[in-house]
Image (cartoon, rainbow, N blue to C red; front, side):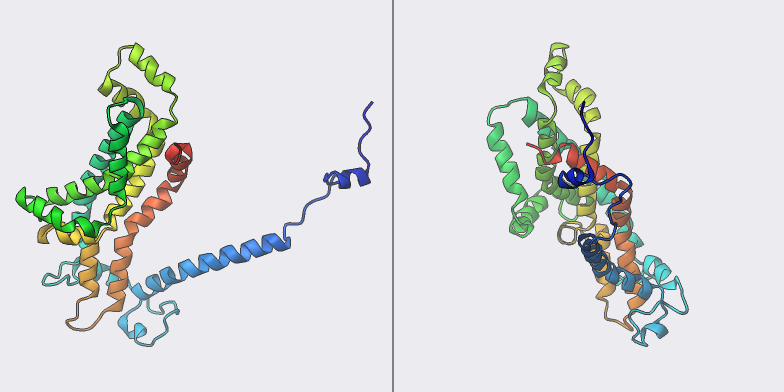
Length: 305
């Protein structure tokens, strides 16, 4: 018969007596909370200043009370930033850049994810000749700075009559996004049991049928990761949009730069802050809504292999 441990034996074995509770406020936990709260305050303070400034009239801003909450709150700077702020010679706000960014982001994200998934699928299951070298070239492209390839790309797109067009900027974002998308999907498919692919082949599935009916339905978590990464990267891009989009397709980030750097007349800090917040709302919303999907996709295989 096994006798229960006594109090001394339980303490020696690391077992707490019945009914005893661990203290919630140990020195280590207090230190952790202090660190987390300090980090949160450090990163949220600029956001608070931006929001507070965007809701103040210029009379309050001139008082110099940077951290004060607005006494006479107004959303007029937001309306002006959206519809009537000057972005150079035009004064139609950043709404033009917003819709240009949407027209750039949607096709660029879809096309780059599709080809990234296709490349990852082919490199994982269809052992084509020189697959390792091809993958190495794609990975090399992911680490080459944009600035190195600007001039050759400008000349290439100009020769193809695509420079300064919507098609040209979509093509540029697709090309630059394909290496990272290929890496994500290849590592994800590397964690898929090869028996599924072999069973599909035995059942008569070809390249495209297996891809669309088997692989893509299994790829929802990593597709969510890819959408978040591509959409935020393309939306936040400034350099490629400035160089390749042309005057008629300038994205929201370029329009924001034009709003803030306009030097004619009075500098409206509340309008500048409102325009900055409007530009960042979509990436913030994506992360807040899809953060769980992002973590799930990463842990499901995005860093395997």
